[in-house]
Length: 468
Image (tube, rainbow, N blue to C red; front, side, top):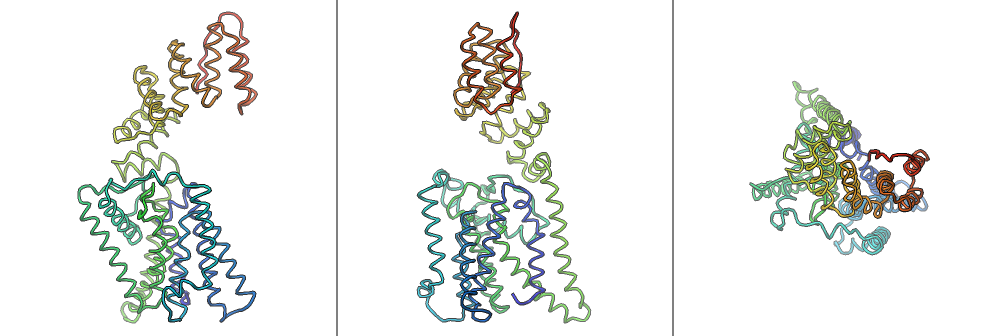
């Protein structure tokens, strides 16, 4: 891009737009940032390679091409959505190489051989060596092709709304799919209209130069892997827009620059163009600060999700876990009960609800049993049930669950309770077997010493609640 003012405006919007907050604020989404960096480096280096004859030749061009390939390789093995890079390069060449040739002939250009080789190697690794087992379990949204198509089109419309109107952007829950039950046909048509409008924009923007149309194409191409054409586990997330938005912000920058240029020709509004640009950047900046505050802690995340999505269970589950870990068990119970009433089947929610209800034996038992039934290999509810029965002196039941917990994944707590039960029953040999298992665990010397003391105590044996 030769217009530095447009480049600066686009870069500022890309940097401070609140749609970026999710990808930047959570360390779990750092792959989106890294993949985005490598994709942009790959595309920019390829552009430099294509323009090489004008600036350099020979080894200099070769370095740029190989650097682009290496960045594509790194992007692809950082995040699979980077596989769209060859498509971006093909569209770039179609717009800017100045040659009249058919699509098939252009696709067979030797410049793409390296990218095809990297893509084939990645697909072999992805599909054969380390296959993604979650893909087969992801179903169509709503269970039907029509509902799924309507939802993905509506999600596209919501993405455009969040980019164009940052002041309306709110945090999205994990694994979020917008509920379109009541008007799914109308919402699907609205999404289709937005997509059609964007295609018309591509055609119309040619008069502003090829860069504007290409930037919109860049946005659409980068959005394909996360568009739910192939169902994915997380239907909608703002971090999916991190890389695609680079293209749309260039288009917005060009459009704003043209509007501001026309305004500058009007004497009474000569300075309004610059004010509009500053206003747009400031709105994005203010909303980014506001949304970033919601990512300060699990409590602020939960509060934001509950406020923005009161019918989604995620906010209540996060709030329940925060309260549970903070020792506020009454508040934790209320939050987890709300999450479960909204459809949560997460064993962790049932487990922490059970542990928050230890003052009510029957409720605690019911929730812990539910946590165990939702996942037989989940050890925490086994230890929780063992402790519950232990505290109520029902040692026969406690042994059943504690033995299973030790067999699946031994830990300090399960070993400690089981040792005490065996010592209370006079089965020292069984207690020493459990101690031998505990010695192989990655536990500190203090914890091992305390387990030894549980065996070597003399006099009347008293049970000790060692916690979890």
